Length: 343
Image 1 (cartoon, rainbow, N blue to C red):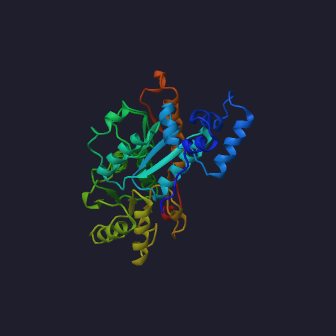
Image 2 (image 1 turned 45 degrees about the vertical axis):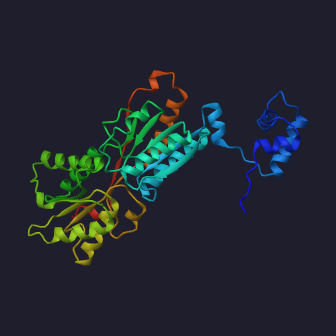
Image 3 (image 1 turned 180 degrees about the vertical axis):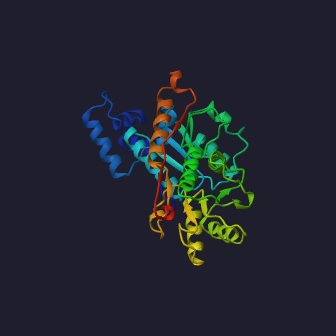
C-alpha cells in the first residue's frame, strides 16, 4: 500500500483553515496568533509533515540548495573536497545535492540538466577527464552561477578553484633531480585528461630546465591511472634495457602499485628507484616505504568553491562577483621514505 505524504492542504482541511494560514503559521508569521501556530505545529508534528523544499524554492525563486557534480564520489581526494563543501554549506544555511558522473560525459550532461530541474541556486562541478565538448555547459552560465573545481577547463568562462598542477609536478621532478636521479619516468593519463597534461607539462619543464634527457620510452600513458595500472606499467618500465632510477606516478594509487611491484622484485626504494605520487591519500602513509607525495588540501578547495559560489548567488546584481577568477590553492610536497636522499 502506497503511503500518503502529508501536505499543507491536508493540514488545512483537518483544522478548517486556509492553506495560506497554515503555511504562515508554520513559518512563524507575526499576523498569525500564537494559539493558531500551536495548533498547526502540533498537528503537523503528529502527521509527520515535512515541508517540500523544492516547492518552497519555486515560490521564492530561491531554494538554498547547491548542486555538486563530481566524476567519482569514492575517490579519496574528492571526499575531502566534498567534506569542505558540506561544512561550509551548513554554516551558510545551504543544502547540498551531490551527484556522480562516473567520468561519463553523457551522464555529466544529464546531471547538469537534473540540477537545473531541481531548482538549485548554483552548481559546483568537477568535470570528467573526457570533457572536450563544452557547448552543452556554456548555456548554464547564463542560467545560474557555475563554479568549477579540481577538474576544470580554461575554455569555460567561470570562476575556477584549482591547484597549480604544473608547478606541483615541476617541484616533484626537481626534488628527484636534487636527490641525484637523472632517469625519471612518469605514469600519466592519456592526452584527454586536463589535469594529467598539466602535471606532464611540469614534468617536461623540470627536465628541460635541468638539461636532463627526455626519453619517450619512460613516458607511460594509460586510460585509468589506478593501482593495478601502476603495477602493470612498472613491469613495462622494468623490462626496458635502461631502467628508470625514479618513477613519478600522477596519483597515489598508481604510485602504491609501483612500490608494490618494485618490492616484489626486491628493488631497493629509493636507492635503486625512487617513487613519488600525488594527492597525499591515507594509503600514502600506510605503504612501506611511506610515499613521497603532493598534498592537495581538498577541504580548502571545497570551502573556497562554495564560498565563491554563494557570493555569486547572493550578489547577482554586483558585477564584481560575476567576473571570472582562477583561485589557486597552494600545494605542498611531502617528502617521505620513498625518496629520501641516500647518504
